[in-house]
Image (cartoon, rainbow, N blue to C red):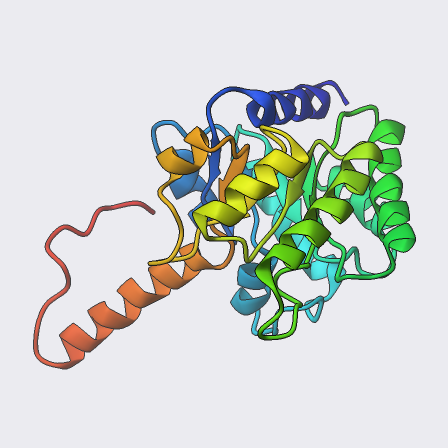
Length: 260
């Protein structure tokens, strides 16, 4: 798979470059094409939550895998940049799901640990990376730990950082190039995670009105920032606001562009 191999290498290089990799998550062909056309965009990431919502499913592997992969296949075929897929916790077989994601054209992926026993989580990471090797590509696994987002309210934040680092280091030792820690937003937490995992090893999600600007995340040594379901929510907010304006007697926004 020479084209996939080249895309995978490009995606891996983007994670290790001095500049932070910024990924505005997409959910269908038109969103992928619109984001890919933005100056400076060098790769795309799909959002599982957003793809599920597009078809009327709740998040959490409720969308059938075949349907999910079909959308990913359509996205990868529509753009010329590397695409990484969010395949949640692997749909019960992380290695097989990664194999099928690669067949659909994805060269990277997110894998949730869901705070399973660490040995099981590491085995899933190893299975995904093995699928990449079997396909002849350097599959870029964004190994996610849910230490923050699955913690009980009031849990000591320092303890969460320590647990995320413990699990993240295990994923890095298993071969994952980066570790995704959703829920880590505060500067001091991000600084501690970068110190614990190493520079250019941490990836985070940008939360509207709460996260640090991407330029500051870059200065802190973060490798990658993505937007998860929030880009779709931005689009839907604009849609609902425009509909309300027209229904209320107004007009559509004057700055609307012909993007499709």
